[in-house]
Structures are given as structure tokens and as C-alpha cells.
Length: 416
Image (cartoon, rainbow, N blue to C red; front, top):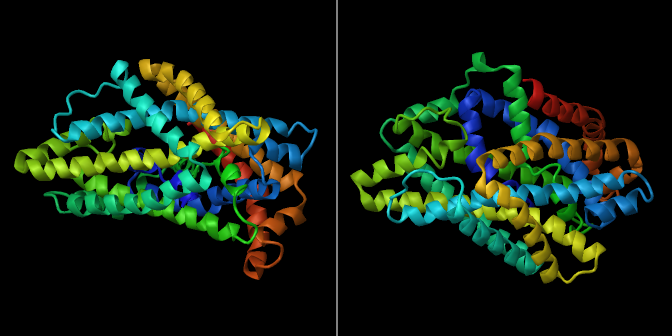
């Protein structure tokens, strides 16, 4: 549930619908599904192998699996990256808190992405996330995930049921169900791969950290496939919850990143004109869903840094949470007061840090680690013959195909 919670986040609700809207609807979704299972999942397995084999945080993992080598850089990169990401990710979480409060009156006003008010809500969101992490893996993260993930699915299904029944919503469902491969370009493949990569929390050190807590008897392949399926299902449900309402309101599906915070409030306001109670209820449920989804991911991002300070620096968990909170909060000030800084931080993290980190992960597992050690983790010490039969395929994907996929993402971000 914790791994699924990390994967199910703003990437599904905020990013996936507008990406599908910009790059071909159903055609994008088909490509996205293929990328998730054949390219992103092997990277997930690679991070899981590192985490459970080392039983340590990202930096400690490299010290244990490749002592005294330059691979320690991968460990430090895997700790630094999520702290940078959560510094601006929490800003979007803060926007969600603001819009949840506005939903009760359906008085959204103009979308203001920067300023003192944003700082207040960003601080609240980040502080609550840190408080959950401070409660520990079992007492905080696992308990929150077991409650929040089922809640997320219930909320998004309720919104979906209402959305598809709106007048003119049929065009939205058709848009998501009928592939138009004439719109498919190399850019579509690159962005579908990048979205699947971003959504599964790859290259952030999260899977390494969470896998270090996984017991030896747990099936890593089942955990990975389960996480990918849950992530994929939620992304598609989010698409069907949002796009029919977008078409019903006459809004273009390729509205971009502003689809949620600039165009959907217009939809909710129109609902409120016909029925204030229904409009308010749907808006509240929608932004509550966004907050819960954002929270499950933010606690994962914070946990990576906290695990480092607890295990390597021997800090008490509450103090480690305060330290990581303070670092992320200070780093996020530029994103709070400048949209340009927000965009640059997002681009730097997504286009450079994540791709470099993931590339190093698959190169380490595919070329540095002993093949038998990788097989041992994938097959749980040879106790899972089914995994053993699939291992040659998985290992081939990790060693050869995944590095190429990561390089495609990296160069497409600059040249497509």
C-alpha cells in the first residue's frame, strides 16, 4: 500500500489527464500501458533489488553493495532528488488545500500560484506530511496508506460516476476509448514513457528505501506488478473522472497543466449554478482526492531523507523529520514566490535528476551487481520458480532495454 501510495499521486490526477489530452487521448493511453509494463517496471525491480539486498537507505545501500566505489554518487543523488522534488511538490499540495477550502463556497476566484497565502498552505501541507513520517513506517506511513489508498479509489469512482452522466460527457469517454493513431508521433512515445516513469516514482530513491523495509519472504515481482497495476488503474480512472466533465463544459482537452486548477473550478461552478449542493459536494470530493493523493507521495519523498539521517547519522526519527522538513521548506521558498522558479525546479528534477538517477540504477543492477545476486532477490532465494522462469526476460529488460528507454526520455526532453 505504501509503494502504491507513492506511485498514486498528483502524477495521476494532475499530470496524466492533461498529458493524455495533449498527446492523442486513447492512443496515448495504449502506449502508456506498454511503457509502464515493459520499460518502467524493470527499473522498479532494479530499485527494489538494491533496497532489499542492502537493507539500507539509498546512501547506505551503495556503501554496502559497492563499498569504496564511485557508485556512492548514486546514493547521494537518490537522497537529494526527492528533497528537491518535495520542495515544489508541496506547493501544489498547498494549492489543493486552498482549493478544498474554496470548494465549500464554490468561490474559486482567479488562480494565484504564488504569494504569502501559498506559503501558508504549503507549510501546512508539508508539516502534516512530516508529522505522518515522524510516526514511523508502521505507525505512520503504513497506517496512512492502508486508509488513504482505498479512500482514493472510492472518491475517484464517485467523481467518475457523476462526471460521465453530465450532458455532453459522451465525447469525453469516446476521446479516451477510441485511439487516434494518426496523432502518434515520436513525441507521444517519449512523453508516455516519461509519464509512466514519473508516476511510478522511479529515480527518486523511494523504491530503494521502501524495499529496504520489505521482508525476505515477500515477492518483489508481485509487489512491483501490483504497484504498477494500481497506479495504472488510478490514472485511467482519473482520466475518465476528469475528461467527460471537461468536454461537457466545452473546455479543450489539451488545456495543459492548468486543467485542474484553472479550468475544472469553472466546471464545478457551472454545476453549482444548477444545483449548489451537488456542485459543492463534487468539488469538495475532487480536491480532497487531490490532497490525499499528494500526501501519499509527499510522505514517500520525505521518508527517503529521513531514512538517511536515522540510519547513517543516528538521529531520532522526529528530529530527522524536522531537519528534512526545514530543508525542503527552505528550498521551496523560491517556488512559492516565483512561477518561473517552480517551473525550472520541476524541469530540472524531472528531466535531469530523475533520468540520471534511474540510468545509474539500471546500470548498477544490470552491469555492476552479480547476476546471481539479482536472481536471488527476484526469486526470493530460489523459492519462487515462477519468478525464476521470468528472470531471463526481466534481466534482459534491466540490462539492455531499460537503459535505452531512460536515454530516450533524457534526450527527448531536450530535442523533441
